[in-house]
Amino acid sequence: MMKKLVFLLVAFTSVLAFSLAGCSNKNTSSGSGSADSGDKNKTNIDLWHSLSGDNGKNFEKIVDDFNKESDSVHVNAVYQGGYTDAITKIRAVGDKEVPAILQASGTNRKYLAESDFVKPLQEVMDKEKFDTSGIEENVLNRYTIDDKLYSMPFSSSNAIMLYNKDMLKEVGLDPENPPTTYEEIEKASQKIKDKTKNYGFSFATIGWYFEELLANQGELYLDKDNGFSGEPTKTLVAEEGGQKIFKWLDDMNKAGTFKNYGSNYEDPRAPFLAGQLAMYLDSSANVRQMVDEAPFEVGTAPLPVPEGVDPHGATVGGNSLYITNKLSDKEQKAAWEFIKYTASPKVQAEWAAATGYFPVTKKANDEAELQKAYEKYPQMKTAVEVNSNTSATPEMSGPLSDEGEQFRSIIETAQEQVYEGNDWKKALEGAAKKIDELLK
Image (cartoon, rainbow, N blue to C red):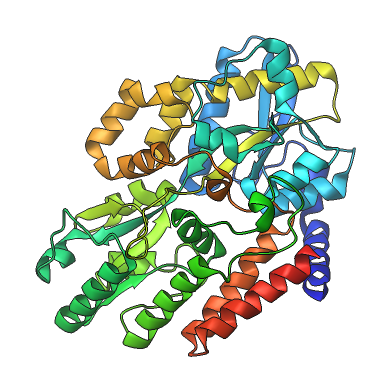
């Protein structure tokens, strides 16, 4: 409870710091080229998003292209900081200054579905008889609650393994057949350490990776089918699946073959590019950038599993687009026009080719632009193949809870305790106890 209170205090302090930039001025943007005064001959709507850097620029191009093509709608894209920042602002502004469209991550799906901020997309699609059969089933399942789709998936990614093909070859391993199990990674990492003095394996201390590794074993994170068949009352992270993950990390950490570089996504990337790390986990959305920057050949592979366990796939990361319900019907219809546009094969292919996210629309894979990208970056196809082999089940949809971000923080703390030499089982059981307290 105390941690939750601290989180809320920090969040609302953040609101005070940037509320003028993000809420009171609709035409202000943190590096978003699309923010402008709109078009007086069209229905003008705001879209809050959390894409920065190259991904932000590529997203702005999609918005600009839509504005040029549409005769009736003009979208004003406004960068709002990270996903948590955007949700904090939505809570702060209430019925005032809300955008017509909100981009949010999957961890916020339960909160948004139960709030009065958004219009369930299912209602719009049913009215228009919109066909969702062309959208990846596993992706749709991620944002569906009680058989109702609340938002349109836009950016989809999963966790995969990146590896240095040259380094694997140097130590006598087959670069075309990388390790697929925890045990194989341990053995390969030991060989890499012995022959090159480099670390064999790593991933940033981020709770999402634990979720992905657990799901790949076909294990649930919460009871009640991860919260999809009722309000969860207990976490299952300390059961057999979670124990296998923590023991594996503990064994490799003690052997000096695993290196904890930090708790930011980018932390393992620099040592990997510098040839100091052979294998690590990353978001598939970052594959293209890593291939471009690496001075060696980069390989990609699905997440590993414990020996004797069949891989089940990966949970869907990324974000989706919500229609808010605080504006006029005309503005909500305008929001739907843009959201339909982003789900088209052409746009999804363009987005995937430029970023490394995999398309949420099946036919996008047949678009010439994306086919060319796959030819140049075959490493990007791993995420597509993993997603196509992932079943739409509660295990593969991640924990459905308002406390998802806090779950991840608790797991991260437990991992850090293991890396510091503490007992892995006590750390994991302690994390489970804290998550259960949050659920209560």
